[in-house]
Length: 606
Image (tube, rainbow, N blue to C red; front, side, top):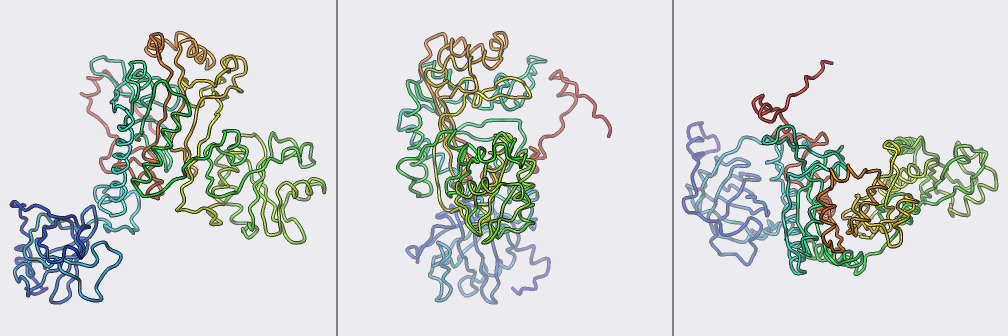
């Protein structure tokens, strides 16, 4: 058949067939030189089609990879003639013999690059419209377009590999925990609203008009119930829901590896979790993590890195220079609660435009500006240097060890803002100057968190983790008398600047739980209304218990080297919590609302 087929003959060869008993023998990423001479049957999508005059080539793709397929008029005239109708993303099944590729045609970048299949027979299983973007790893399509056609986006090899890895990771976790006596137990998805943290997603009840379920932010209370129930060791790979503002690493629905143990302490939980992560990395991506994860207290993390999830793949540290400038003529520093500085070796090459961009960046964290000094051979260059005394300059140089070519960045003011702003800028600068080894994995534990933190908006103390976290031994009175000094029996596992897991030893006596609620400003009536079933359970011989939960999505994102958590969730939401593919959330009928006893307030016109 000629390439100039008329429309009739083209349609004649686009007849869709059924499988007719054909069964795949291999995936499209399985055949090697060891299979030469084998008769095989592959099925998949057409990645590319190339007509080289006499021969027609296609790259056949499934989730595992690609195989080159050849239609030859000398081998099978009919199969070759019909192959003129094949287009990209058509679904085909091919039956043929594996042969070696000709000299000079080997593709070392493919696992199947030494071989090809010469076709004896083939079936057209379905046709395809022209996709709205190329089904390739490198695409210039916007994320919005790819999310609208997510079912096509998932065909791209880079995303398919993410979900293959995610599956391997989940199975590794299950094997590990099953081998250590853990039971996988499902907990309810429709539960009671206990708003103490992020906003709940609420679900109206048709059978109980005017009342609502909540989707669980985590299985926290249920897993504690399971410990009271005597099931001893529980885990679950579970969906959780939080109605919060989104970022690149957050979604309204996400997945946790949830773990709880009875008769345990911090060391046992951390040891189990550490070994699980080490096993997971080895089995899934063949990476050997350190035999022992380093540890750092919360206070040390804030002091040296400004944040409680430090990225320790590079060595830049913040330094506290508050005392140097106490009472300084430079009032911005002299009256500040804290003054922190970050020295960037050889950072003096930064342009004023870049510094201005960094100034805008720190404003995200509540900072009112970014002070800086460029150190030259013969002078310090900065708008603020003229306000410094010679003694202040000398002490600053001694503490920071600054050298010509360096730049110093400062944050002054409220401690939490100064630390967070400068700590976050540290990451940006590490990326800018290539200080971070993107292929490295640096896990570490952060311990000794504050139990409570003051919320100025609510004018009360709130739990830093959750209200069921136990204070450290001997600090029961501290919770009520000096709440800002109380430390929690809590621990976070941090990887490359991301919190991948967090947990604590729980309160297991009603007396301590009541004291915690009181410190949080939760009245006895409110505690009974929200957490009555927990308070009842603690009265019936609750064992000491604790656990940890890992963010599976974030963990997989890091393991894959993905830039967004959306790249490891099959059908993610946008930053406005919408699904572009299904157009959720959407409106519902008046009848449905009446059944639920709900009336919507009319929107006000702009």
